[in-house]
Amino acid sequence: MSLQVKALSKSYGNNIVLNQVSFVVQPGEIVCLRGKSGEGKTTLLRCLNRLEKPDSGQILIDEIDIMVENKGLSIAEKIGLVFQNYNLFPHKNVMENLLLAPRLLKQGENEMKKRAVELLKQLGIEDKADQYPFQLSGGQKQRVAIARACMLSPQVLCFDEPTSALDRESIEGICRIMLDLSKQGMMILIVTHDEEFAERIAMRSLVLEKGRMTEGDAKGDDTKFNLFVK
Ligand SMILES: Nc1ncnc2c1ncn2[C@@H]1O[C@H](COP(=O)(O)OP(=O)(O)O)[C@@H](O)[C@H]1O
Ligand SMILES: [Mg+2]
Image (cartoon, rainbow, N blue to C red; front, top):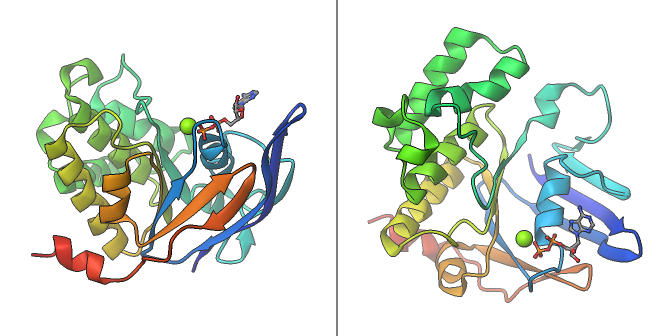
């Protein structure tokens, strides 16, 4: 099982944002995606999450193209996104935020409620189920966004600038969560400007520049895990 992106291209008018971008992510890998502002990092995440339609190219999970219609939602829902500003629904409480997508997809209500409770517990915010987003700190909102993205058991989880609004302690927390998820075999793709964070968390990095994707400095090795698994 892997995520394979093949020759993905996306333009807005004359602005070629993604130009035949290709890369592979393996199960359990944490990959940081870097690049200057405006280079197309968010656009790439939006394409992976089908919020934006690429002009050409393929996005494959387990060799199956997630963009091909009528392959069924089970494949299309295999990639989740934690938005930069979390995008929680302000008028819905935490539990309702988590249950929204499963309800739209007509998933079993009881089973999904159980899953929501489990995820909140795993993320250390089980006591927040009835709270509204405005009652939560930035770090807590992010955890809710992660729980929501995990509801449909994605194999790939994307984060857009996850540390931009967090204090040091919350960054520590998010590192642990990402490592936990990766140990469960999830593929994690993180867009970040935060050098220190990338240095700590990334097993590998990719760089987007002028529409092209290249491998960053080869510094990936498993010793990173040892920093966290104390
Ligand atoms: N919906 C859109 N319509 C037109 N241009 C867009 C749209 N979204 C992004 N862009 C353009 O695509 C380029 C990449 O944007 P973005 O993916 O947000 O970059 P990054 O996340 O790397 O800062 C920018 O030039 C931006 O202006
Ligand atoms: Mg962006």
